Image 1 (cartoon, helix red, strand yellow):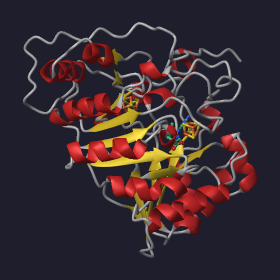
Image 2 (cartoon, protein in one colour):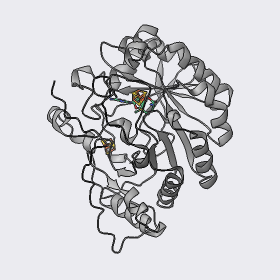
Image 3 (spheres, helix red, strand yellow):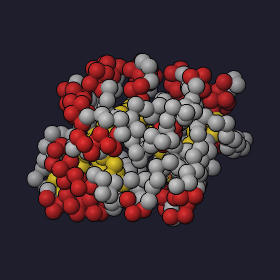
Length: 362
Ligand code: SAM
Ligand code: SF4
Ligand code: SF4
């Protein structure tokens, strides 16, 4: 298969930051479709100790892959500075992600800095759980209140094959328990569903976490990046996932918790909890997408399926003031038109160049 790979550390042109003259930085930012900027995902590393086949396939992300050198990474001070700028323009929620965020040295130090600088912001983190049991207490003490753990299967052989580094499921389950006992509850559990690989486990997964206070979110396999060999045939529509769960564990729709929430909530009729479905392929939610992404090397991406970002790191390292940065972010968001999932076709999914999710933050 031909792969349209963009190694992220290879020099690629950044987008020119739109004209900043007359930009209002006093009101919450809105894009061309009147969508607010509410949610910021920060990728703190492009590296990972897993090689999930749908995200960082081993044949591409191998010893020769040009991961970012240390000097290209945003420092913690730079991350906090940019997060503060985004917050001043409306961001209410920040998620640390990657790559695997717990691989970034002293990640709890970053959590502490963000929690102190932005006490009103909903701060969370997504992890593969491999190093969570040892870190959960430090993260909690640093100010993290909740987190998401990815877990694609309860069957050890299937899980080891999907993470492709032979990591056992028991360790992730243990990490979820430790995180919950440290007060990082409810834990959200992300399961990417791939037809013929793990979709037969959807009901088991729902049953396993039902009543435990945790919320499973079933995610449609997406055509992010250019390396995961995505095909529409591998997607199990969320409607089908809900149908299967409802047949075994009767459920009904629940109201969204927040505007622009990507997961559709479903609650079990017996009152024992809820689950969510994220239907980015079959039921696009671009109309309410209020999410920006900050890549490991300090570029802003206004869509998960973008191939170029705006270079805030150079602006910052070139001496920009906070007001300059605010103007730049407001102008970038103000010019935003993205709606990739609404216009996705087999052709765009296969041909359009896109950066990898591990780089801009899943
Ligand atoms: N390493 C961390 C983890 O796996 O939780 C954080 C980064 S990961 C890119 C964030 C989320 O993106 C994970 O829940 C992962 O399952 C999801 N993801 C990655 N590739 C995906 C794809 N092709 N389709 C749908 N979800 C994907
Ligand atoms: Fe790593 Fe997360 Fe991607 Fe899996 S989904 S390869 S754990 S970044
Ligand atoms: Fe948002 Fe882009 Fe996803 Fe649409 S495709 S929901 S604009 S990230």
